[in-house]
Length: 276
Image (cartoon, rainbow, N blue to C red; front, side, top):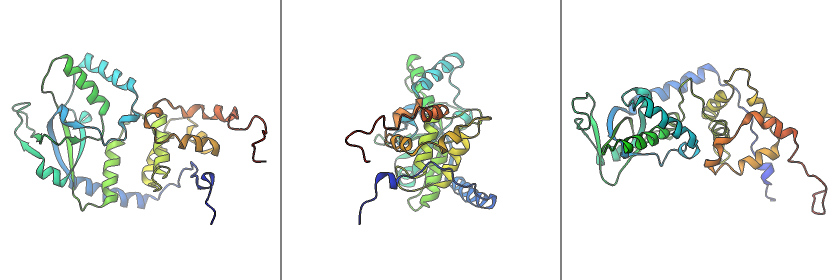
């Protein structure tokens, strides 16, 4: 049987149909109950015990954002107790029992919050706010603070957890944004394609719908239209770059229609090696 061409296998960037409210509420309740079961509370942690190696967001972050946050911290200082700055952490149940210890708060004596200590061979898997933590580390380094602390919201997941719910928990913690903050176009595009299965072959419609909503939430924006009408040749070219996470911060979906109008994906002339 002949092998299908890469063009035939290509998944188009088309938004999925809006799910029914009933299905949305059913899935939301399942996730809410699972998340509530996994949540262990907020804890003081050593700043350098946070590890962002498992976060897909970190390589997509714009370096300018760290510089911007560093400037903010220089002006207002580090606000660490406010919930909006808490770092989400997801820990396997086995590691929670063997490699993490709860104790009274020695980093901030008298604070009504337990502190976590980890074994030397373990770091806490953090999922968001990497830019804030990078800026904070620079700030405390300048202040010569040897044992700086932060606050983590900890979720513990068991080995027998529902894989779909566990994946949704990790995704939601990685991809949550305040209402007044919007991720970059490149991050939105890459995640739409990622959840359409372009890298994994598995489509996650709930996650995909979330990123479409972020894209089309700007009043008067036509970015969703530009993406849906993108020529297939452009999509194939962009998809080839999806594994390179560090290049997407500078993408501007708002100019894709200009790129399309230039017709730069068409052959300039029919040479001797053309298909015709």
